[in-house]
Amino acid sequence: MEHPENSSEYAGLQVNAGVAQPSIVSPYLRQMRKKRQKLFTPAEYVEGILKGNVSMLSQAVTLIESVLPEHQTIAQEVIEKCLPYSGNSVRIGISGVPGAGKSTSIDAFGVHLLEKRGGKLAVLAIDPSSEKTKGSILGDKTRMEKLAVHPKSFIRPSPTAGSLGGVARKTRETIILCEAAGYDNIFVETVGVGQSETACHSMVDYFLLIQLAGTGDELQGIKRGIMEIADGIVINKADGNNVDKAQLAATHFRNALHLFPLPDSGIVPEVMCYSGFYELNIDNVLDMVFRYIDQVKENGYFQFRRNEQSKYWMYESINEHLKNSFYFNPAIKGMIGDMEKEVLGGQITSFVAAKKLLDTYYDTFK
Ligand code: GDP
Image (cartoon, helix red, strand yellow):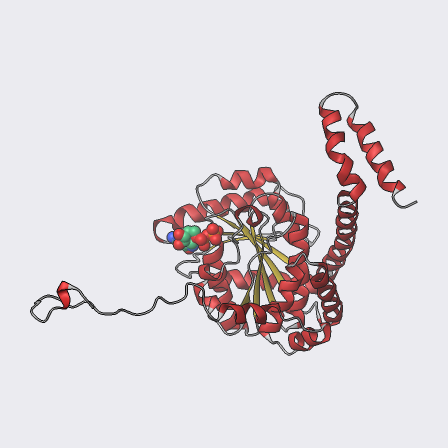
């Protein structure tokens, strides 16, 4: 090679031929993609799930989350076949505003639960905001370090597709598969903002509300009516010089709870302080949850609540189905934009527009 630096008299570093640039696309990618797309029969998924095969469970959950009709068909059959093996878990909803310490706490609660009570734990999430952010915030494995590597845990981030109703339905269906796979404790994580809490409440046996001391949340909680759906309230970050404040907040909550009518369960929600980060008082919080579960199993409320939830989900499914059938109807899709413009332009009233659209929709069935 003609280069001054390659001369034998040159004292500096020599220029070498170098190595070929590696491909910027991983040569294994195609293979991986193919592997991921492989579909099994519903019976194969069910067999795998019942054996507790985590990979089969994950793949079946992916089908539940998929919007493709062929995936949905398989998913629905898998759910139906798993249904007889479901229902045997304790489902616990965990809610709190961002920063309340949900992930830290779930990590601590989860590890303590598995150590103390054995069994298997699935962590699912309902996060309608993840559709906007396109990345899941809740149920993220990297935020639950100890549980993520625990052999008895299964962590699944929130499904991202669709409305809150759609996201919640998928989580509920995932619960069925997890139960069939032998997960006897299920955590459902949700953000502490409005409707997603209600959705979470409609699928769990116990709804735990995580609060912080001294943020004014005490009063916000009361205003939003969230305390009416909480089965227990815990004040996180009761560590260091925050202990006194946390205990004071707990007293406020206890006092406030006595102003509410007795919940249908017949049990006044307990209030407790703990620290998720320093793992203080974790076992007591878990005992509080399971004490409630034992009590409602005995007084019949556990089954009553599950029945109510089944009923609720039947109507929810109908509502969602009807809504989709209407809005995805080609005739409706073709005219709804114009109707909206006419309403905004003051040419017709909202009610007339709605009637016209509905009439058009019914006509498509004639
Ligand atoms: P999430 O948004 O509700 O999931 O909250 P994270 O679990 O991500 O916690 C938010 C922040 O609070 C993090 O910086 C945690 O380290 C911190 N944190 C969580 N639990 C505790 C706790 O018990 N004590 C203290 N001092 N900090 C905590």
